[in-house]
Image (cartoon, rainbow, N blue to C red; front, side, top):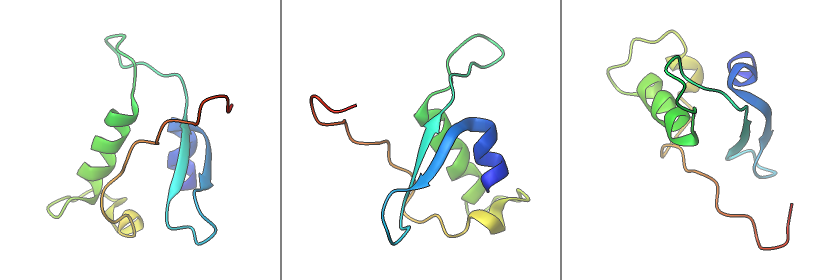
Length: 80
């Protein structure tokens, strides 16, 4: 998964000490038509790969993803 994440993200780190979630810092990227790649696009892609009827070769590697993907909550005011 790290190689896949490196294509789409600047960084990938555990969201918690128990590694029950991950934080992806997405690269600035655009589709072939110039539209920006968003966190919703990445979420949709992961859900397609992990879907019940998926035949994607990465499906088995992503089976630990449960409950879908949630966009990050807004950072508290004044934080960076």
